[in-house]
Structure formats: C-alpha cells, structure tokens
Length: 86
Image (cartoon, rainbow, N blue to C red; front, side, top):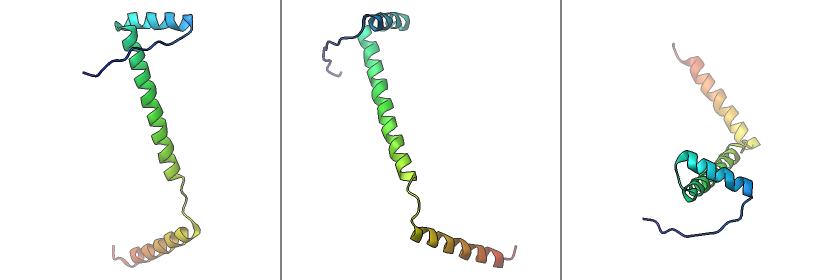
C-alpha cells in the first residue's frame, strides 16, 4: 500500500463547498476526491505534452533535398507501373 502524506491547502469557501457536495454525491471522501482530481490533472498535462511532441514531429516538412528525392521516386514508380502488364 502506498504511503499517504497529509497536506493542508487553502481554497475559496465556495470551492470548498462544491468539493464537499461532489464528494457526498460520489460517495467518496474529500481526500479521495482531491486525489482523483490531481491524478486527472496530471494525466491531462502528460497527454498535452505527448500531443505537443507528436505535433512537433509531424510539423517537420521535407527540406528541398528530400522533396527532390520524393519526386524522383514518384516518377520512377509511375514509370514502372505504366510498364506493368495489367
């Protein structure tokens, strides 16, 4: 079992009341609700980082040399397909 650590936080009274209502509605302790919320926040933040890395990788457009190579490959493949007996 994981070791628990007690902590104190300061939140606005209205937010505290909302937390209490939601914890009661979900039949979980206030502490459990905070744990669920923090875990969800951490997971969403990790997902944002991953999506950002993926987007960065796919934003890498081919440089002129790569583009020239791609065009030459397309032409060569098109020529082979044209000579194929269908």
